[in-house]
Structures are given as C-alpha cells and as structure tokens.
Amino acid sequence: MTVRTAAVSGDVAPREAECAKHQPQAGEVLNEREALAISLAERIALDPHTVTDDFFSELKQVFSENEIVEMVFACGIFNWGNKFNITMHMDSDDTSSYGSDMAYRQESLV
Image 1: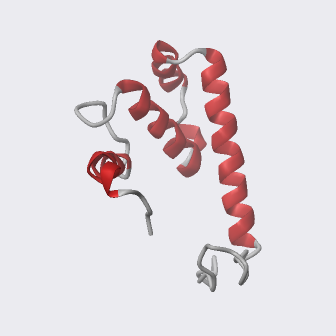
Image 2: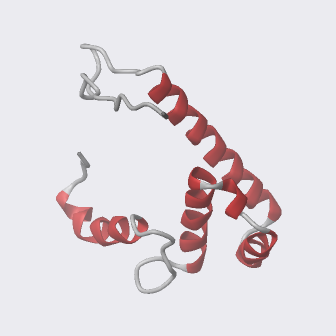
C-alpha cells in the first residue's frame, strides 16, 4: 500500500507507473538522469553483468563518478538488505505501524 497526500497523488502516480516499467526511458515523465538511475538499479538487482562498459559510458554522460559510485553502493546495500530480510523471513511486531504476518514463498530450486 502506498500512502501519500491527495495534493501530490496526481503528480506522483504517473512517475511511479513509469518507474515500474522494465528499463524506463526518458521522456515526459522521467528525465534522462532519472531513467538511467532506475535502469542501473534494475540491472544491479536482476543481473549485474548487464552493467556493461557501454552502459557505464552512458551513465558517465550525465553522472559524475562519485554519483555513480554512490548509486551502485546504495543499490548493493538495499539489495543485500532485501535478500537478508527475505532469507530470514523478517516480520514486524505488534508495536510497529507497518503490517505484519508477511507471507514468504516456499519454493525449491529443484
């Protein structure tokens, strides 16, 4: 569930929809920096081998090396945290304002 005020809902919803697309493109909703940052995050999460030299060249056209390092670091930390929480079947407790009773898939690799 997404929580936001009605005042920003109309502005935020189209941007969220564009961000949810596979490899979003710059256009009316996202600027080039936003689209490339989302593409980087998706590539790191799904298959880091797709962060090629050519893609780094694209990133370097709009981001400084420090910005790229910060984005890669942030993506790595968030991906690690997500995998840790899923592996450990983390859940919130009764004192949390977040929902509890998380459902985790129980699938086998074989």
